[in-house]
Length: 173
Image 1 (cartoon, one colour):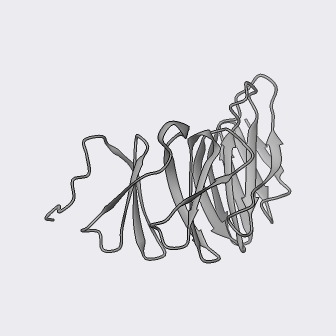
Image 2: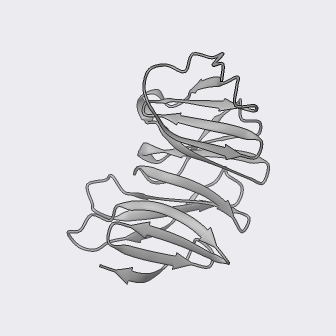
């Protein structure tokens, strides 16, 4: 490879290919996009509000989620608009399945609760569920989708949902 763009000195936390664009997320507020994997465009969207960690595409929009409940959307991967997720916790990833975006996080309001959000258009987000196990921190690690089921993994177990709205606890350690 012949790197033609200076990508800075901090390390990358995730690289993902989404609907014709590579997304490279860094450990600070910057992330990069590229249509060919050679030439990269730097985006610095969130400054003090937190860094972005993952991307998804659906219904004509790219969506990126990050720490502090940050969500940005873009129709083209270049022009970004911040959206309100309704939660303040750190998202670990975002997905688009069954005609909706879904993301989950640990709430950062002083509680140990986890929270999930969804959106059918990427613009309006609904906080649909809180997860609480008393004094245990409900650290959400991943939300994914397989064969008609949204699956959320957290520090002490697994939740599932057919629609990313109504969640059922399937396993608690």
